[in-house]
Length: 551
Image (cartoon, rainbow, N blue to C red; front, side, top):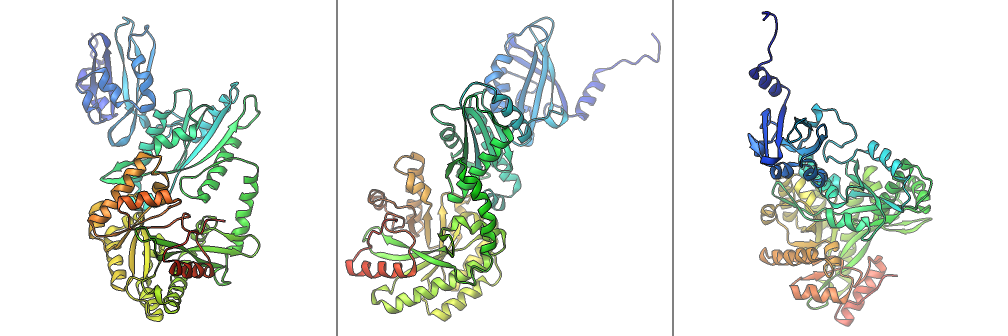
């Protein structure tokens, strides 16, 4: 044998595979055995090394591929290709590729991180289709003779989630939701991640509808790094009738426009596309121009929603909620313009104005009405405001100018605001408490907090998010959350306020659970200062808070 002839030996093979982060595998179905050589452990395939079973492999398979994994691992004709996606170390996605050998009883191939095997069309974080591939495949699906629906789901408050958890843990949330989405729909449906916090699905119209399937699958609690997260979705849908000529990219744009409208209506909303949404998009640009200077012109003013003692029925206080008295469009709710305020850098200015105006109004009521001595008013703080320099001094100044006693002016912050920087938040909240502000933790149950922080922060009130209160009669999970928050408040000696009390039945159920206070349309919507004063007078004359239905 010639000396210059080179023989590939086992040591060189192992070194080359390790350096390339690739492993070779051999699958023997009659023995239910997988054997590896190469970089199996570094790739995160420890449960399969050095030998594993088909069941162990399926456990590591990407959720969307599990339905076909069993079939692919059965004996196949020689030359049949094998391809699966695996979950690997650090949340990375891997590809398992190979072929059935000539003897017909074994398959062999390689496994590597997806980045090592260039495969287009998949989102690297979730393993779902990426936007470009989704649009392409939707276009093909439109040729089928079936009524279909395209739904886009936007994860509510994702920006706050990013701020509270950091990008790495927020990515874990997205990856988990992607896995849930893939597992919720049959293989013929198309599922994709089409934006940073947006998912999409195209599926035949059926019962239950895809909107319901999406909510049932994705709006379940998650626990990430010790934090409980309760995701909610804003949904936009487009109906596609059989035989309808349509462009996939245009359909996706319409669904995303519907999502934007749903988000403006509030967390957890759903909107179907209609032609009227197109004019709404143009009107948003005009609204931005009108918003500049609106605070100085006195167009943005507090309205006051009553907070009622559920045990006695007495009026306890108000929450100040901003409304825009637009000169042409009439009275606008905050969902129509608060995001614009944030984008334009007006949130801090608006917040300072709301605190001052609401405090002055409360001081006037307490002075003019002998029975209003214990009345309080709550004002929301945005994330920007919580960490704004000068906030504590502003509260000290407002209390000095109005003469309000400690706790009469309450400031509401969300769990996400606190978890953005828990240590700094603790310092700020303690300073606000010492300055005489009452402190309420708003939307409790929806965020990303740890109970260890709650126990050491100076809150005096917990507010249960309206979503859980509204759905507690029909959703077992919501009912458990409401009951748990009430018990937690009792254990920590905190007052508990339930938002979203829309009927006497809900009020009775909350009272039976031991909830202290309630607010919602069951008592009254947010009232103008004049309407709120009438409400206040009637509550003291009647001895209980009157019911002022919407409209």
